[in-house]
Amino acid sequence: MLSSIWDDVKQQFSYGNMIIRLIIVNVSIFLIINLMKVFLHHGGAPDNWYDRILGWFKISSDPLEVIMHPWSTFSHMFMHEGFWHILWNMLFLYWFGRILGDLLGDKRILPIYVLGGLAGALAFFVSVNLLPYGSGGTHTALGASAGIMAIVVAAGMIAPEYGLRLILIGEVKLKYIVVGVIILDLIGTAGDLNTGGHFAHLGGALMGYIFISQLQSGRDLSEPLNNFFDKVSNFFRGISEPSLRSKRKGPKMVHRNEDKIKSRQQRGKTGHRSDRGKPVDGSHQEKLDAILDKIKKEGYDSLSGAEKEFLFNASKK
Image 1 (cartoon, helix red, strand yellow):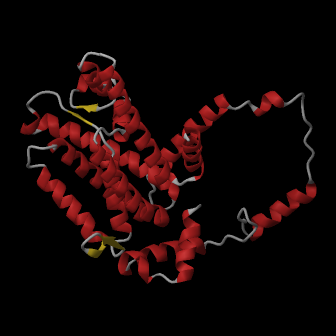
Image 2: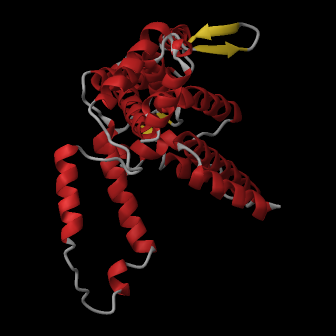
Image 3: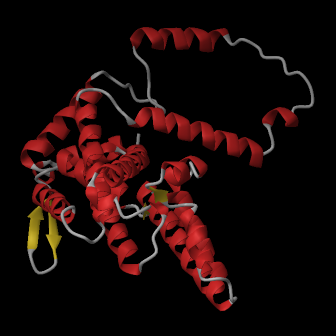
């Protein structure tokens, strides 16, 4: 049974979209954290061992701890302790991430999530050290909420008229849900419970707003991160997989094919082609921008079947 479950998880991680992968990573770390707590408790370990180990991966308000554990600026955004904490975070990630992935493409999900998490960590750190509520000593934080808030706000900006069906309420437009969540976090900053967490949520929300504003201005903030992720992925792939060069027995002579060269030169004059052999014209981006503008003004449901299909195909690129 366990082997079958593990195979299913690997299959979903390999072939699922980025939302599914993020959910798998977060849930897996949640299980590891809580199983570690069980083993330490029943193993007779000192009570502070669990907190000390977890502290290495939480974001701290102490500058020295951040310097000593620099990975915590990233690790904290994939960690949860409580069941309800991870449940609601993963539900929001799935609901809003699915919408955003359909509209902006799967490759922009992880950069928005990470940038939102970093912005949330910064907001948490600054607020604890500058505002009176943080004067009671060192504070720590963990959770994906800031990264998810960036996705929530980004989805609300791209498709404000998109309707979600809420239990006991009915269909509610995305813009009202986003505004409502932000207002709740604003109110939460004045309370005594998870004040730093609410500031972190607002930091993530601000990053979601900045990301979409920059994207609408023609600057894609996801490109530098995606380039970095690709380099890291290629590095580890090069370690785990045999190098192609090592398989070569000797030098290989390459012959020039003049017919192919002439064909490529001719295509360069007439326009480039897609991987499927269909001509790619300059109107593709214009059509995509027009559809996104239509969603922003009239909502996703206003799109025709052809426009939805075009948007779905564009999101895969």
